[in-house]
Amino acid sequence: MISHKTSLRVRYGETDQMGYLYYGNYAQYYEVGRVEFLRSLGLTYDKMETEHEVMMPVVNMECRFIRPALYDNLITIETSLRKLPDQSITFHMELKNEEGNVVNGGRVKLCFVHARTKKRIPAPKVLLDLLAPHF
Image 1 (cartoon, one colour):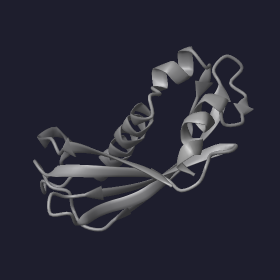
Image 2 (cartoon, one colour; image 1 turned 60 degrees about the horizontal axis):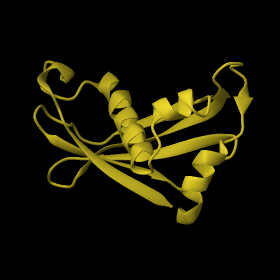
Image 3 (cartoon, helix red, strand yellow; image 1 turned 180 degrees about the vertical axis):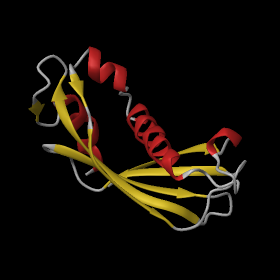
Image 4 (cartoon, helix red, strand yellow; image 1 turned 120 degrees about the vertical axis):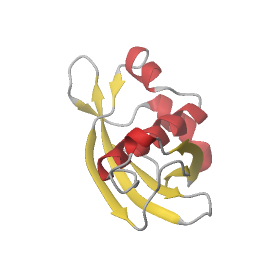
């Protein structure tokens, strides 16, 4: 298993009338977690698409709301992989507030698609090589 943490402060424009992080914005927080997870390995989405011709569309997302994330809270996004990817990759997400309490959890499954043909492909070697030492 491998994990990565990054933080993001809840901005006013991301909240609803109650001052809670609007539920539709959690998908964006999940994306920040995934992008920074890959960046921590030395791989960016841009490099995946341009150099390796691999895109990663979302095929499934599950999200559970435990307590509200509030305006101006610093949220820690912990992103982890529990197994090596094969035909798809599943990121497990846990968002915590400044007190360390879980506010949200979920998972996002993505597949791998060749950038030009748009056909599904197995996990790219470049990604597997970066992840293998952690499993």
